[in-house]
Length: 389
Image (cartoon, rainbow, N blue to C red):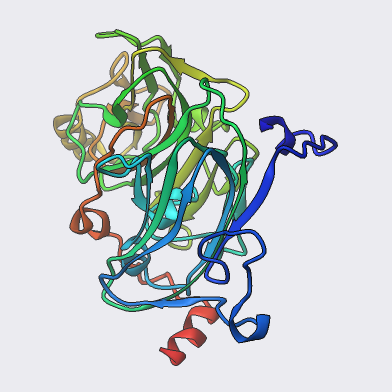
């Protein structure tokens, strides 16, 4: 039963437990660990550049309960070139197609340590996903290495074989990026999936490339079932949507957080930011259609002696809200919210009753402009494992 994962005292013997890994590729009962006499004969597999491997191909009905995997730490471009795809019921394209780290809640090819209710990257290198993934007739999970180097992949998919009620949605994950965004046009987190469905949440990455003092005044808006000019759900700011306030630093909580915050020592603006938001206790349900967006609006302040800078910024960044506040308080030339242009990406997690295709991310778009900054350095484990390759 679906409730078993939340009520561990429940015992339902109609449910069958299965697990798939390189030690048991079919997930068949009593078939694990057959190589090397069961003494760790197939713990991992080397995946070559441009190779695609099927992690699981299973007949339903059932529910994937947990996905764990790991690959050696690597530069952001190499990590972002790894992808997961999930296809349901022989659909002619994937319903999940997303760069690997984004599926587990962290963008920009930079896995970092954090834990949430549905995802975790333990110690920054053990990828875990706990959202239930029902499937009815069939599910196929694939891993694609689109990088120019091989990777050693370890993984395990834990699932239960059981009846799936008709009101259980299939998980869809769609990824998109706009680099750069368009001035005055909201970045689209998700659009185009047909209901009935439920917006589970998102993993969003921001690379601030505009000037200003703060990048995150933009509101998250949810247009539900025919909303056009105005949304049904309208937030109050980026950090507010994440559950924090007055700016945003690195943190993680049960249903929202921003574990990725890359910035130079003493830097005011971050180089890369990643946040997640899970709508579990606050469901976002749609019958027909859903569109979720986030504005690119920031805050800027200019003090005495910055008159020229203030005028130039006002020329390129139109005011948002009620416009600029001048000479208040004394010594402040101008301050206020303004439109910005930044680099945004998002992985959107949506349950839909019917399987649907999502776009396959463009590799060049996914890996552009995410190189390590001078103040970023490989971990010791990455350095040691690189000696083996």
